[in-house]
Length: 512
Image (cartoon, rainbow, N blue to C red):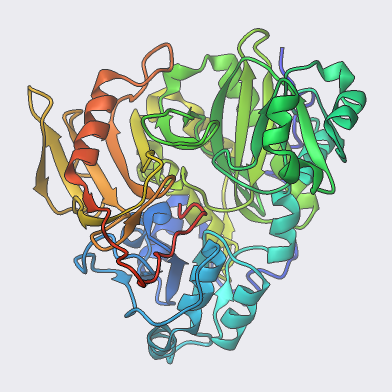
């Protein structure tokens, strides 16, 4: 059985949408994958990915000519050919990725770069973001940069977990049995959600990596999070089920919804994250799911994409699923209407290299070019397990309840495990493609010397062929060796704030 009860509309033959994207049409039409790839290899218009790091779209600069990363954190110590990190300037404490992006767009060095590279074009270029808001849109307009995403207001609407549930219901892609309610007290919770049982999971509208997901079995559990729950105008209260998390990225295009592979999610491992229910990695491994579950997940994503299209949403999105281990039902978890932490896995997989990264189809909707594409054929090819190679990534956070300043950190690049499980640095590298064997991995450093380690801070991401979980979906011995090795490369000092010195700025949000 599955929670998806209808087959999504086939959009392949649908009349192309007339929308506010791609208004400047070129005369020629691109026919198929080969011409789409050639179009991007010959692209002359500046395209930027503006974010804290370049992690999410790692490697896309090799597919798209004139693609530049504008970042706040230099993960590669100045050695990446297409990363621009402006010199540090005084700023207010960052409270979100949007704050970082807006700081970058206001930076004189970024403004100069954008204007210089855009001087021979009708606009100064196009911009991609992990997260952005109305201020970001205003700053891009002032810089004559086109934001290659639906409006922030629509993204915020879809990102609201309550609205995601309602969109899913319209698409007949159902969530775990739930109620969307205003909760005023513990007694109010029990009265309104009695049918869901005593063991429930409560989510507020926004948040990630377990920050706003609360597991409640009794009043003591509720009281720990009472302020977050009762201050929300509405929360999602779900029945607690034995489940396994998975994720799938997709892209709504004028020709239909293109769907990537179903990935397992690493969630809540104490070796990686201090957050219960917190995302801490992914595996691309076709064998983790049977054919029926993969098919149902793809159908659900297509149906959800159809519904987004009706709302005027075009482009990249990701769906988190929860598979009930007792019934086999596949439930909608949440939707991220954006590029995500799993995007580098989707866009660097074997099927993407055989055709094109998913994000290129997203960009096509903003490139002012007509194109023809058989989406059904592409989806069928991408669904074939033979086209899905096995890769895994670990998102490693500082898990101790402590604060110190980092004095030593491992550089980004290729690392190796020897026969004794000892880890060593091999060489600098900008992405994972040169990693061929499971005794090697690519590490992208986030936290560098001089930064502060605090509970929940992102240290870095490690990517390697093969699996990091076993058949029981527990961390493998190999994964634990890699985690231990990376942590062993970090050192810090706690004596960083002498009397009268300013305390460090500690961000409480996810950078990835």
